[in-house]
Structures are given as structure tokens and as C-alpha cells.
Length: 173
Image (tube, rainbow, N blue to C red; front, side, top):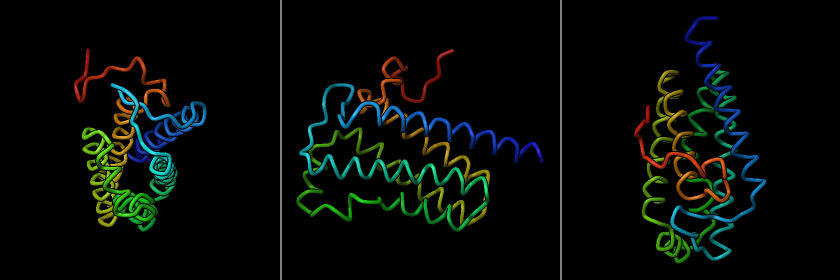
């Protein structure tokens, strides 16, 4: 096994364990969505669809771990495109509900969400090109994006982020 493939496998194993931890915290703490400054107030129908979307993304991220480690380029590309285009929100909500969702979600959440879906598109494109370095990079960025959003908007559901550094993109040494 080459150093590069060993590094990729170790990275994927680490990410898989973090996904499991996030999933455990999500199951343990119910369905409340909180932001750093207060509750994201969504009607039950919108909250249910958004949570269904998040669960589908989590499932896709877990599937990516398997597909990346097996070099299943077509599956990686398909999952990336599915995440890019959204799983459920656009399919299940009426135009009125989509407008309400956009009014009620904080602009910071919407920016993070937009970047997340663009990263998924970049991952899909990298898989189409069979570029393992970029696929792993974009997978890392997707996972980082999940953690950043959860730490800012869902600390109640993911209490591991309660004491996390709130800076965006700055390292403390």
C-alpha cells in the first residue's frame, strides 16, 4: 500500500467516525434547531422537511466514505450531484413554502448551505475526472461545512460544539 492510499484510508476512517459521532448526537438530542443567537423558528412542516433533508445528506456523506475508499467514481459523482441539487427540500415544498423557508432561515445559514451545495458539485466534477486528491479534498470541505453550520446553528442538537471556538477559518495556536 502506498503512502498516498494509506493517507486516504486513514482520512476516510476518521471522517466516518466523525459522522457516526454527529449522528449519535443528533439522535440523542431531538429535533430542536437552535442558532447561536436563538431558535430558528420554522413551522412544523418546514422543519420536518429540512430535517429530512439533513438526514439524507448525512446518509449521502456516509455513502461517500464507502464509495471513495472503493474508487467507485460513478457513484461518487452521482451522490455529489444529488447533494448539489438537494435531496428533498426542492422536491417536497411548494413555491410558497420555499419562499417562507428562505424568509425564516438566517442569511448566514443560507450562505453556508449554498457553499455546501457548490462543494458537492465540485466533488461530483472531481469524481468525473477521477481525481482522488480533489475528491478527498472536497469531501473534507463538505464535512467541515457540516461541522461549521452545526456549530453555529444547531448547538443544542450537537452539544459537542457548545465550547467550540466560534471563529470562522482562523486557527488558534
